[in-house]
Amino acid sequence: MKSIKSLLCWVTSLALYPGALSILKLWVAVHVIFELQKRAMFLRSAKGPFLQVTSTSSSCQQALADDSFGSLPAGDVGKGGRTAGHVLLALNDASFTLPRHVEHEMVKLKSCIRWAFASGARIISVYNMHGWLEGAKESLMTALQEEDFGITTVLIGENGRPVGWIRGGTFREGRWDAKNGEECGAIFFDDLDSGKQRLIQCARELCQDVKESKEPCQRVGNQIDPGIPLVTNACGAQINADFAQDIFESGRASAVGCLDTPPSATSCSCSVRLPEPEMAISFGPAFILPDYNPWQTRLTEFFEGGELKRVKLADLEAILLRFSSSEVRVGK
Amino acid sequence: MKKGVVRWSKRLARFLVSRVLRCGPIPKHVAFIMDGNRRSGGSRRMKRLSEGQEGHAYGFLQLKECLKWCLDLGIKVVTVYAFSLENFKRSAVEVETIMKLAEEKLNELAEERGFLDRHGIKVQILGDLDVLPQHVKAAACRAMKVSEHHEQAVLNICIAYTSLANMAEAVEDGTLKPDDVTDELFSESLYTRPVSQVDLLVRTSGETRLSDFLLWQSACACVQFQPVLWPDFSLWHLASAILQYQRSFSDLQ
Image 1 (cartoon, each protein chain N blue to C red):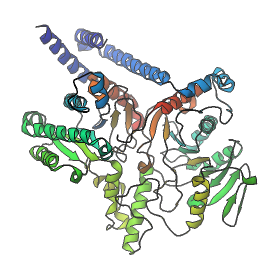
Image 2 (image 1 turned 120 degrees about the vertical axis):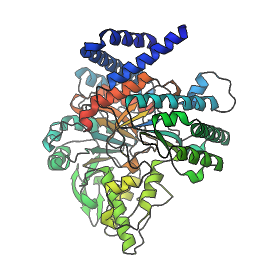
Image 3 (image 1 turned 45 degrees about the horizontal axis):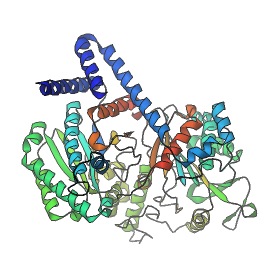
Image 4 (image 1 turned 30 degrees about the vertical axis):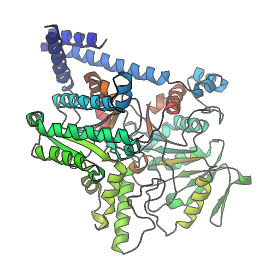
């Protein structure tokens, strides 16, 4: 097959090279289509226990038939096989030139978040590396508050300050209490405009601490553990640390992060321990690595989601299938 | 004669493919995660002299071929992930085999200078060289020394490297003024200076993660996860990766 292709290329190019740019472009287009088809076949060929569960799920079949994925009952998908605890949804679409364009895609975004919860994710971050989510924050919060993702979620602003609830709860004496001891989730907001900037900010605070002869709580050193904050700012962090302990380390929480940049272990002013995203889905016409916190993406599995407005349940299921069948060897 | 015709045809096809691809934007810095050497060694049913040796040896030959294709296409900087700090967790026999192979191939690069001189390739070995055996360190230094004056292209070979360790090292020196710490300074503090930003990252064997490779440098890079194993990586796979980069070029800007 390869030799036939190379021969065809050779013959075509040799015969028509002097004035056949259009023919060559056609060859290029054919090749690209061929590669894209190969990729689609590869996505669909991954097998795993997850496939058996979804094939009998009537709601999934209905969603596929409707070519939309409205409400998926939580826990209906993703059982069996490896599932991601933290899913990152990266919006890289260049058509998102203004915050209102992000708002237009809210329906699909909410569906993706709902799907991610249903697949077993505990934490979901929505990330736009151009910083446009910030302009759409208010409307996004309003839209998310109208949703029911099946769990109680709390909205947290800068530096861990709570700003609201989805589905009930109270903030009293520095502690969040869900109604009747239900599970809690969290939505985080932040104002830095790229994952790299967060690391730079951390480095600056480290230098500041050294300049002021302060001993930071934890210094960057040879003991690299992405789960531990690089530098913890003791000022005002007590409530955050308690909240982080309750929400993330209890193992009972699910969270939705809706951010320009996500909170991370490298944030010096927010000591919330956010685990590394295990799965990242990049939405946009091109498959680009998001400028997410580089400290936390060493083992993240990246998948191409295509354009957000055209994403389908089948695409997301194929991604989950591939993820569940992948093996992490960590160097071995 | 038949072999000669086939060889000539392949060279012509390679020439034509590179001319077609050069019609569009070419990435300046391409990074490869050369995954799948051991699996390829097994699938080729070679006589196993030691664990994974054939696969890694084929992987190195493939690297040389791939470098030639990149030079034909006009790619200036190629960074490859040869050995991670995490790979020291493998069996002692395999690690020793890989170290011996690394020493052998680095010495080969240093001694057969024709290839490096002809294309003006500067070889840089990136990583924590202190953890390498002395003989490998010496071979690495020799390879870097013979090519230090070359300026046309750069081959970065990451051995005993993880991106987290590199970033931590860059941040660790807290003697700077806080305002001096910028994006550019951070990039300059990494091993891959001065050309840090990766334009296209290719990983073979179908895995879809970065495995602690160039995490800072590959933000906003076009990525291609190829299902083929590294020793089977061909010009067509590289061409499809470059085509994908060219299709994504406007979004990357």
